[in-house]
Image 1 (cartoon, helix red, strand yellow):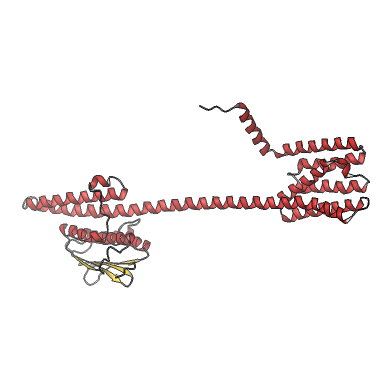
Image 2: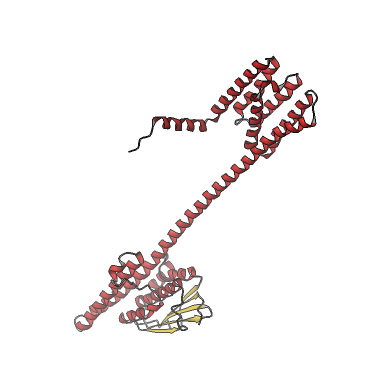
Length: 405
């Protein structure tokens, strides 16, 4: 097991403290520059003007990050004033020059554009005036000292722009990450809604069929035991198919349900099985497939599944609410749209409460509302209406899909 050395922990703490309190570094740096200036003045000859000028140029380093513009103003104004009172900044060595460059560079990196230009103007004017007050100034003197002013200021602006771009990239990255998380969350919600619709359709259809079949069993159990046993076996098979479909839907135990490894995905390829199951449950279904050759194979999976579920839900509603009715299922093409029609003959009068519940109060993937939502998500539309003359009920869905022949 690796152990951290005490020295490395102390060093990390020190670095963290200095990052949180940069004025400690600036104050220490200002102290070093003051000492360097005093040493140089001691060697070259110490004067009151020289000491005051050196202190005024070096001490602003201590607050260069707290008040950059003030630090620049004090330091560079001190340069001009010292020259004006007969002092010579060159006698102070490099400490004062380094301090002036540091304050100007810091102002360029920390101030917005207008205040940064103000710091540059103050520095240039102070520099030019101090050169003008020196003995026998030349153009070369103005050019060289101007370069000393402009170079650190320009470097500071470049560094500031780079840091701003980095900050913008970080902000953009954070925004993109937030957007990605939102999309993941929305996708999870959409998937839960899809799962809810699928489970509702599977369970409602299966339970409705089983209830109808078991109701028939109770009526024929004593007078026709053979038919009753066949009906019970059909109920058993219906339940097994529903369990297999739920396992497929949830991604659990698909191979256990079908040892050959294939759980048939609901789609119009199985519409014949659905019609036959409804016939066994007592609902006569006429199926008309008016699609081009290979039309079913070319349907996109979302359209295929939506069409199957719409037919399944419509036939289940007929079975539940219109005893004695028959149904017609016609699937064809209308232009570039899949045309799915389910119409029943009406049978016994629909129960108003049940019909109202189907059309008005069922939400979240149930009944007519759920079918409309399926069609809408596919970019299509669905209509559902009662036939006032015959008393039947018709559902029609138009789902956009291009099927080429």
